[in-house]
Amino acid sequence: MVSFILRRVLTLIPTVFGISVLVFFMIHLVPGDPAEMMLGERASEQALQELRRELGLDQPLHIQYGRFMSRLLRGDLGRALRTNEKITTEIAERFPATVELSLAAMAFAVTFGMFAGVISATRQYSVFDYSSMLFSLVGVSMPIFWLGLILMIIFSLHLGWLPLSGRLSYNVHIQAITGLHLIDSLLTANWQGFRDALWHIVMPAFTLSTIPMAIIARITRSSMLEVLRQDYIRTAKAKGLPPRLVHYKHALKNALIPIITVIGLQFGILLGGAILTETIFAWPGIGLWLLNAVYARDFNAVQGGTMLIATTFVTINMIVDILYAWINPRIKVS
Image (tube, rainbow, N blue to C red; front, side):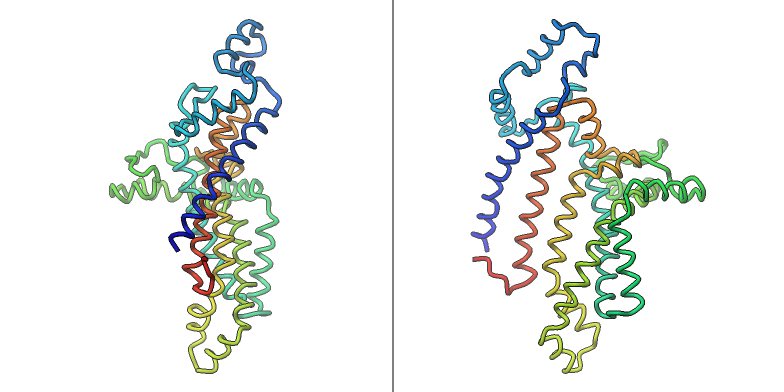
């Protein structure tokens, strides 16, 4: 098992290197001049040339890439062209917000998605089965920006139950420990902050969870149906074991492999920055930060943020592969 984990970790090196090449050269194909974006269209050519030289944008691409990789190997993502702040500092300020939103969305998705999938499989062709699969189809097809706006109109503007946007109310302060407001408020016994953070995260988290929830429900249903047809399940039922024990202990555990794969992939996508959701709800995370960086043609910020997202995604995939052997002993890791 240890050698398998080491091999999976070593495969990250060429993967991350390939991603760095693609990210760097594809971003430099995007039209637009960062120097002109920073100085404005009326800036003189001399001022533009001086700024390009200062930023290193006048060098050939292979030299710029070499400088980018040398900084990357030292853990330095450079400075944002817009603010001249360290990119690692800006990411550290915003990544916890994306992590908290992604965790809350996946909690919704896993809880309701797996529940709907298991019930649909154990009650195949029932009204609940048809209803849950219909809702999962709607969840996959529904545009996130449309759902977010509808929820804001209903629960914020009309009913006034939930806050419209943001992560916290202006008059609420939570002492930063982990950067996750819900956890930090619990650690400091700040119950007002916990309630405020919880009400702020409910609507964007549910909006973000609809697509992974629908996918998890459909995958859980199909995987459970396949396992329920196996001989050992029929044997367990013939022995007189309670249906709940058969379904949740024997069937569900062996059906988890494709479910975990989907959960890992979806969580990696959410951590990559839910740009639409964060933009609609003004959630100060990585997605909104990257969108603003693209608008400003901030190559350094886009490169650094994209490298973080890509590394996070491949790391989650590696963890999912390692979990396979733990979930299902029949899988060989040799």
